[in-house]
Image (cartoon, rainbow, N blue to C red; front, side, top):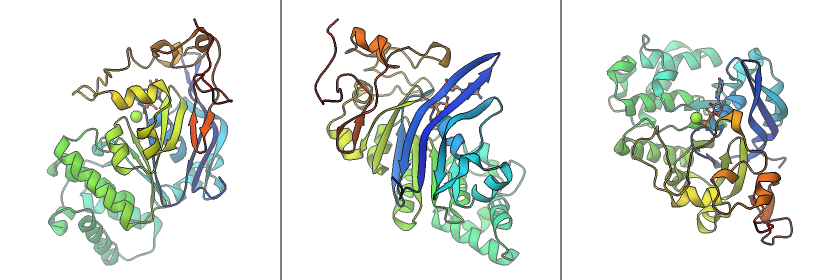
Length: 331
Ligand SMILES: Nc1ncnc2c1ncn2[C@@H]1O[C@H](COP(=O)(O)OP(=O)(O)O)[C@@H](O)[C@H]1O
Ligand SMILES: [Mg+2]
């Protein structure tokens, strides 16, 4: 626990809107060891991006950390000022997003944009900065890297734009890269190429990766460990192999056995009825109980803890109580 690169402890994130308070993240614990790839998985609306933005110190107005803390390299970054955070973001922690255009300035040449990161965080002269950018473009397999340095974002395909974003995120060899659905906006061929690049990064750099996705295929290819998130909570956590070999939570089982619909925006899962409720309709007991085929009366009354079912395998479900026995009170 103490040797984690990133340690999220009992994090609560509150959204205030129209006089209402909603809890988008509820007592979340998550550890990222050095040199590891950790998955954060769940359907759309489960609070994955809010978790990522909490780490980055980039929560939207009205959204704030209301409890717990985030430690990075032993430092409590969740209490940093925006000025302190600017020293960390882009250098020690960086992020890539689903839609590369949100991270790129449409009216600035892409090479210049990546160079800006070096300008902000180093004293290197221009020629050296430019060389580093071109080398990084080559490292992320951008063809004709020198020419592409001068391109504007609109002159590049979606896949190349994402490679530019990855180059920007990796240029200072950060300790942590947060990848929030980095391939969701791309077609499957390009997605496979970007995933291959992420696998290469994993091997060639020391960077740990927090891989956020709704796609368990990506998790199985990249991640050492998985955290399954449902409606603001971790409902299962284990090493990747274990999650796929013996998923415990009905939600995880549903995710693994579901074929997502073709349109990524809809994300209705075949094996799990219904959709993630919005934050104004969070169930009182187990947050998943309304969609769970195995729910009992207890599930709608009580909120389950995260049980350690096997060493390192945690699950938030009354099917696995503290004694490791199947529980429940019938109907
Ligand atoms: N700025 C915001 N204002 C109000 N609600 C928000 C805001 N950002 C996110 N939410 C709500 O918080 C929940 C989690 O959102 P998000 O973290 O984006 O989920 P995910 O990334 O898992 O799809 C959703 O119900 C979403 O509607
Ligand atoms: Mg998201």
